[in-house]
Amino acid sequence: MVNQTKPVMTITYPGGTSASAPTVLDKDPTITWTYVDQENDPQEQYRLSLNYVDNNEIALYIDYAGAEKSFKLIEGLIQPGRVVKVQGQVYSKGAWSNLSNIRYFVLDLPPETHLLSYNGIDAANPIYTMINRPQLRVFTVDPENHSISAIDYEVYRVSDGAKVFDTETFGNKLHAAGAG
Image (cartoon, rainbow, N blue to C red; front, side):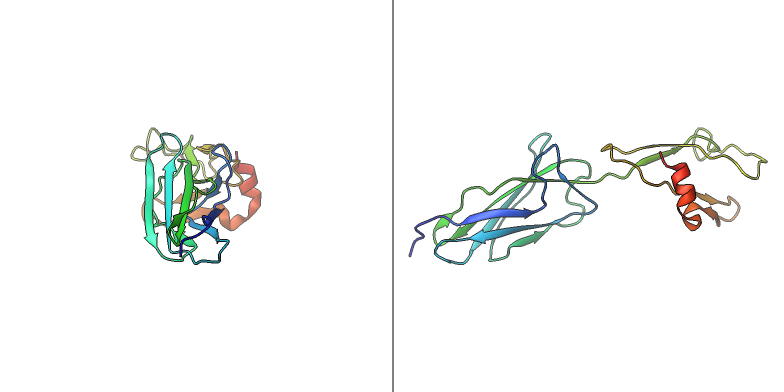
């Protein structure tokens, strides 16, 4: 028996509905979708296409047999910082669905923090000081322009590599003073 209607695939996660407002994720997602068929025929096959928005390069294309309604991306497959468009199709009883809705996500890039004092031109050529309470100054930038809520300072002793100070152990007072 052949379907009288095409099945329908709706991507439900990630949830970003535009390239300018993608879902921001810390790790590779599990893509999820719903499947609807008016004749209640089971899903037999699915396709997913993940493309980078900036140049439409294919990040992943899969075509699998099965009734699964989710697909876990392999860690490290997607390049952090690049917006990804997700779209798919499902198949049942001789008919492919139309292309699904489009969803967008981006893997978050961590902020970049640069120590502006007591580091010299690079860590191989440090500046030494006899001040027992140095004033640390940093410059922090988030590549996606997300707000920065905390900065954690860790100070190590050169002679043995031991951590001698960590602002995380002091709570939010130092975080708030150092953020930005």
